[in-house]
Length: 204
Length: 383
Image (cartoon, rainbow over all chains, first blue to last red; front, side):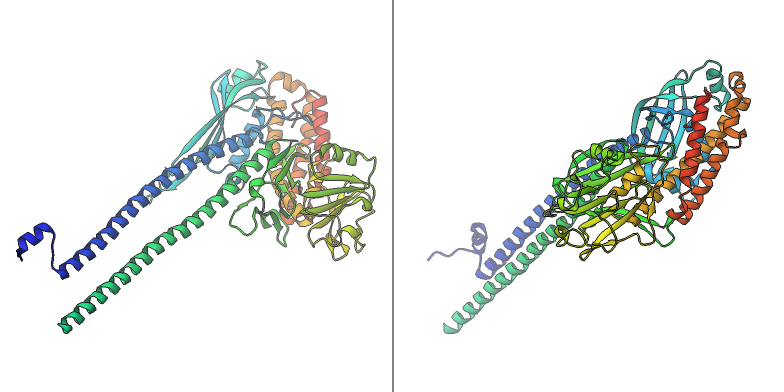
């Protein structure tokens, strides 16, 4: 019988019996290792996908929230044009009410946090006049902010969704009560209606 | 030779059992790993579903609320088998700060608080179609939109009050609801698969404390059958619930007054009472409306101050109309005082509870009269 040396055994993959068992073990461990590597890759891919999907969902939610807040603002009794017992005018903002709301908020800032925050959340709502002049009034302002250790504030929102809606602005007192630059344009010119847009920014 | 064979056989046995133990441990670990993932995913999916339900419901309710005077039929067949609950609780104090309100799905974490939104609904509700109806609450100016929520699986029977304007209005307004206008209790049919039955009694002929309930409803579970008795003048209501075979008056402390101006054809406060589960839920929701009323009134107080200033110091044509100033501040009954009285009553009302709000109607009517007067004199109106 022809004998083969150790070098040839290794070359041809022939091992003594003890070594063969070790090789089988190594093989099994290798298979399990590769299996777990594949599971790990799968998990990373899955969680990455979930993260992207979550971000998309967050964006959709924010867009939905912006639409909801726009709707609520357009029909807000505090600023909507009304005519006695008749139906309220759609897409119309009463500037006398906007001024009154500004004053009320200035005198009672806690209404913002105690009540209106529950309706609008983190958002900025402004009424913007485009014609006859460019001018802007803030109806609600509650930006998501944080505070650094040194006491300074910073914007703490990740996303912002802005919505615009075209509206008419009515002012039965012809701009009386605005600052002089604005009221001089309205007073005496019998301008009651003007034109503008509602800007709603929602933060998350 | 024999000895060597025995040793080899034992080594084989050892290798074989070690392999099996190894496979068993590795297999168990792999199995546990996947079971862990499945359990985690199940809980994540449930949370996501709950979150989605609440988000969609929030959106539906917001949309429905602003759709003034509109009845929406919302398909909720996706929630078939789930029970929705609407809760609004008042603590002992009864003021606005004592309110806890929320809605959600029974037996799940899907819930959302309703700190501001007024929502009149049965305590619990199931079905495939949800009905939402929004009506503006005007006192006399618009305070907010009140939302009524019910389902096609909730049946309403309206008894009595034949030929009254309210019954006719209700009949015209509730097209598509599961509602029947009857003249006698014998016309009531078995609840069957209905989730809830509510009797709306307009003349006091059916809902009397301790009186036997109609035979056909006797087998129904407690909580399934409720009733509301509306006074002839539509100024107060009483709530009833089935207790054994008799009616039990829930409002034993006295009727619940309806706080309105009486000028509105479809009064939100009155219609809201029809859809409320009981007196506590109704008062609780109305307290939320009164809180908003307080804020809107403060806004109108600011506006009146500006109007007074406009007619006193504004342009010449405004100053020339002296009647406006009279109605606003100088007359015995003037807008400034009326709004101050209203605001003062509202302060007491939201602090101390519903029973302290009854005077609101009177002041609201005064504001309405003064606004009409301003309109008649070609002045800028309050609202």
